[in-house]
Amino acid sequence: MEPTEINEFSNQMKEAGESGEPLTHISLAISILAVLVAMVTVLGHRSHTEAVLEQARAADMWNHYESHKIRSDQMTATDDLLRFQPNSNGAAVEKKLADDSAHQQKWQLQLNEEEKQGHEFEAGVERAEQRALHYDIGEALLQISVVLCSVTLFTRRKLYFFIGLGIGAGGLLAAASALFVH
Image (cartoon, rainbow, N blue to C red; front, side, top):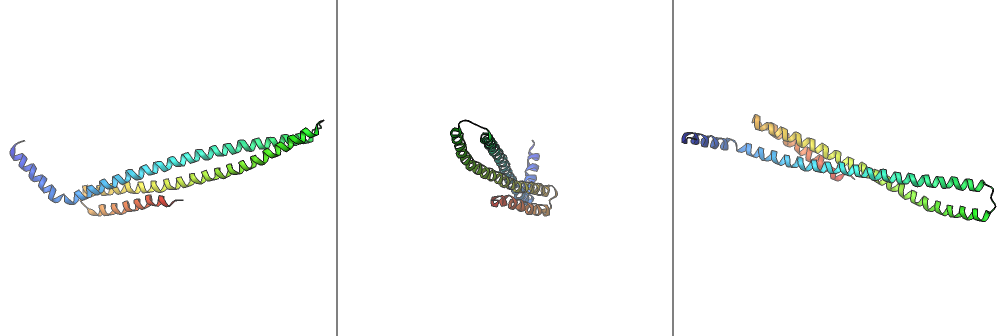
């Protein structure tokens, strides 16, 4: 580069620095908004993952419940057949029926507990999905905010910047509202 070109370039940089000061603030705001988008995105992904895991737990619990329910129903049917079959050892049949009755009572308590846990897991799925929805809305609004603020750099119109900041604030509120989902 020749000395005159260096001076011209230096003058251009000084002029851009003087007139570009507000743009530096806008660029900083866009960077902060981009970081917030990334954070809300991660939180949204974690909430979606939590919902999937809770759904798997619920499905496992309902499968466990169903297998115990089938076992209980089969024992009831077997006991009914045993009651109606003629037999030569009534005392052994009565002992077997009494043992089965004790098992049935124990299993019924387990079934009640498994049913309760299944409903709790399903409620956990619903909560995680609601949180994820809040994060997704917040993420979308923050992304729109970044784009609108970026338009300010091209158009030099601060209206886009302020609209973008307003939408970004809405995105933050939407994401923060996920913390209140219970």
